[in-house]
Length: 438
Image 1 (tube, rainbow, N blue to C red):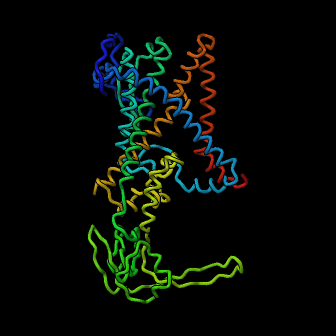
Image 2: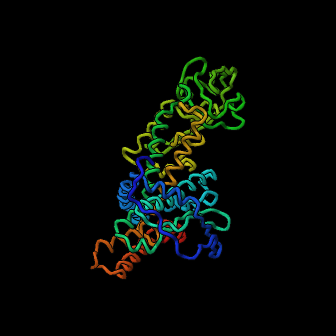
Image 3: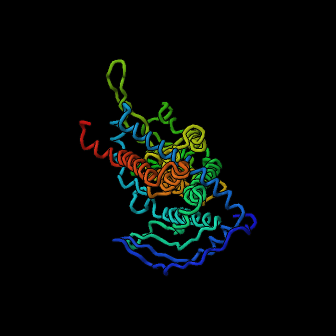
């Protein structure tokens, strides 16, 4: 953070409570507490930029919460009230239910390396609570890590709960909103950097990109590998292997291929084209015929197709910004639509050179983890930040007309409603699939 230190923040009050417990256990959950790092929060809380940033992060929370509610309501509508509901449910149940947990190693679609993004997101989330609390003169009792046995699953900052109840609601709201707000800001920043990085990516060569090779095929025998490009057949330049189906070449013909590999072009002679058969259905007569085509044995993406994939990804934000949450690069369906997926990253180049896959992957998972953490914690679910903020807002807006009991009851009702909607989205498809009569 930048700016000048603010002199009007009081020092932390003297802790007159009994010494805190460094380790507490609840079944298989452990809380490790420390006061290390509290001085850093105190110093950062003194910067003048912290207070206005607290207001910005607070303003983000209702927006993030409404966005999360929109996503949930959209999914409920698509699953249970749309004509395609049955098909969507069938598609959803093919995905492991563990995909709903943001825990690498448990979620089969999250690489273990995503743990770094999770740790960073949780740390800045909790630290932001503490920094804003100190900017308002509130005492931080301790900070620490939450473990599931030995697995770190969260972090926490303990703000003096007595002071939180005594300060104005706008101040406690700023503390509560700081965590989700900073995650949202970091997530959006990482997404913008990802978009800029992908916009710099271009096909490594002007040809037909090889993304798969059939074992035992002519291409395999010729030493062609995924990540290569076929630049020409019989010295005729090409950018799409569709030329093999236009009648120019025949089954059994021996051709020469110009292949781009690792930055260099080489010629492979005497590649004998094999054959594959396609069944073509005549929609008018209803009869089918079989057509035999020359076969090289590769899965390819044309040069124009590669440019379309990267340009499309860069422009999702214009028409379908939520696509960045759906187009997860580790999903099988996204392997041919995300330019930095395992399959496609080998056929693109950028100013980052060989670091491009690492940079794009790191930016994506930092966005994905921080954004999901931000919108989930902004939901009006008690005791999440959003739920506590919702209850605090009710009390403050009521200005004495809404009792603490009524505010708690309303918050509990909203919490149950959101939980029911989440259950319908997460578990509902598996239950509905078990009872086809639905």
